[in-house]
Each structure stands twice: as structure tokens, then as C-alpha cells.
Image 1: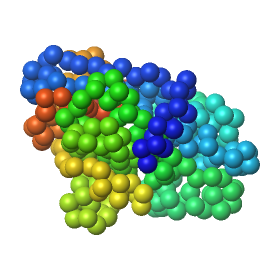
Image 2 (image 1 turned 45 degrees about the horizontal axis):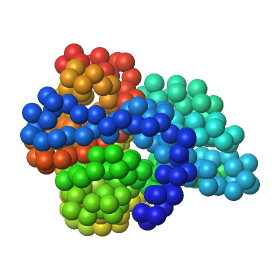
Image 3 (image 1 turned 180 degrees about the horizontal axis):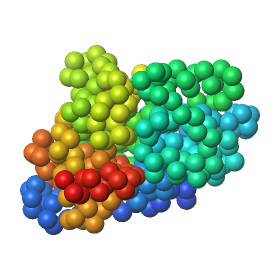
Image 4 (image 1 turned 90 degrees about the vertical axis):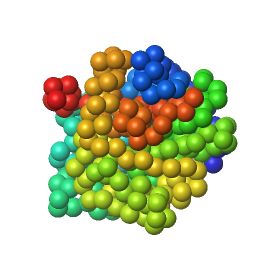
Length: 314
């Protein structure tokens, strides 16, 4: 699948932003290693999701594009699909939970998407999307469980390694596993000895349980502040990829996540959403020891003002 990631990189050239890799002497000294942050909070739409969404939608046939696309997302994938629809002239319909962050909803609407609200306590987003698709015939572009999505997300690690060179350890957030599995495939192809570790909240530890047991686990509506990881489980595509290419999984507490968001804000002047701060949370909390050369994927920066204010006050 590495060749698909390389093809995705060529497809994305000129579409996505060139994302900086940043370091902090304070962070390096605190955790004891050279830490390289791939800052996808600077990506268009504020997160890595544009990579997978563009890679998937741009490969649809003209007939499929004319019919429109459909997805479900709490925010970052929704924004990405909406922007791609705007760029390619494709009508987009997004199934969004009623409690989705306001900033993410507003941005999705701003890109021209049609949003359908749902109550997660009454129906699953997959069920609602299936019902809508059966009536409208749109092509479903899921947030993570799709080969083209995984390939697009894998370009994050591809770029990081091409810029930094050798890495001993790569930390990636894990929700549905698209970013983690794609990044792990790229890392293992380019740096076979690099250890790849996925990080998720303790309150949304379905991937960790799945990884430990070899059986797919799910968590329904996990109450974590890291809204980008509130996926119920890994997917049929991402689960086996995680099992094959990822070396380990760790979980972090809600306090560790908010501490990481504060650290990134005050020390590195970076606005990072809780899901994007998971790798830093793992390092700062001691859940995983830094390697001499450690790459950390900062997956996004779409955090609403109220949430950020609450984090900074606490």
C-alpha cells in the first residue's frame, strides 16, 4: 500500500499546504530527546483530514461526482470533504452530531456543505448515512475506513520522514485509525526500525483494547474532550493495518490531554485541539519515553473558544 501513499502525495501536490516541522528546546529538555512536531494544525481546514478526503474524492468518476458525496463526521473530516467538494464542484452532504464543536460546524457550512444533524443517543451516524444514501445515491466517503483515505493520511508521515530523515519513534493520534495506519505503513517502508505507537484517550480506548486482544472492540459515545477520537471503533480496513504495522498503543488521561494543550499554547505558541495533542500528552505524562529522535504528529488545531478558555483556566 506504500505505492498508494506515494501516488496520493503526487495527487495532493499543489492542493495541500506545506506543513512545518517544529522543535522546542524546552520540550526536548523536559522529555529527554529530539522531538519533531509535524504541525497539521497549519493545514488547510486546520487538520490532516484534507489529505484523505481529496485523495478519495478526486478519484471518483464524473458520474459519481455528479451524484454527490456523503459522509459523517464530528468536524475535521466534515470540513475536509466540504472543502474538496467546493474545489471540485461536488455537492456534499454531512451527517453531524448535535454536539459537534461550533467552530467545526460553522467551517463546514462555510465551505458549502449541507449538514444533517443527528442525536448520537438515538441513532448511529452509520445508520443515518445508509438511510440517506439509499434515497439520494451519493458516494459515501467515510472518515477513515477507506483505502484512499488511509493512503492520503499516510502522506503526513511520508513528508515528516522526508524532511527529518531518521526517526526512532513515531507517535500518532488514533481515532478510527486512518492516520495511524497510513503513517505506520509509510514509516515501516522508509524506516523499518522506527517504532510506531498510537495514542488515544483513556476514555476512548477501543483501539488499545483491540490491539491488545486482537479482537475488535468498540466504545459508544466516549466522553473524552478529544472529540476527534470519539469514533466507536477501528474499521474493517484500519484494524488489520494497525495490527500489522503498529508496534504499540498507549492511552492518556483527560488531565494529560489538557496539560498538553496548555503546554503547546504557552510554550510553543501553538493552538492545538485536544485530539491533536495526544502524542505530546503521552510524552509529558511519561506514558511513553522519548527516543533520541521522536516524531509527533499534531493532527489538528480546530478548537472552539469556550473549550480553549476552559483548558487555559484550569
